[in-house]
Image (cartoon, rainbow, N blue to C red):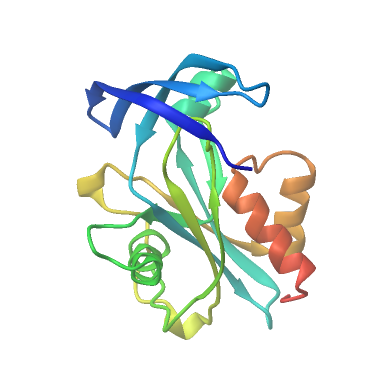
Length: 193
């Protein structure tokens, strides 16, 4: 599908957490009618995430941390269970980001990770593209306790659990983070555990 867009006007609304713009533009609909449309868009750098799994122990490593948007949306329940993730810094490659974030958040030094896909988590509002990885871990890769970086105001709980327990958390809707849902289902469909 090819879209016709013209007269794009970008107005900066905020440049705090990410660059928030209001985009006014003319869009031609399939009936050939041109209409002026306005959207707010967060311009945010890409991110990368990884699901760590151990096929021998049949376990995965997830994180739990406070997320203000979840808190606001669920009326006081702000804990989110997620895979290890972070923003890609500067010229960093997605794999480099995943390896760095794994050390910071969960305390494991991975030799590598396997990229499985790239997705937009909220394409109607955010430019961020998420790079999804999986990686097998062993106890020998543990180098610290993880928990995130204090300088980034992170307080992350590391959750190592049986894969069956993680799947049960999906089933009972305790895991609501889309990237985590995708990666857990990927591991299950690929029979990695």
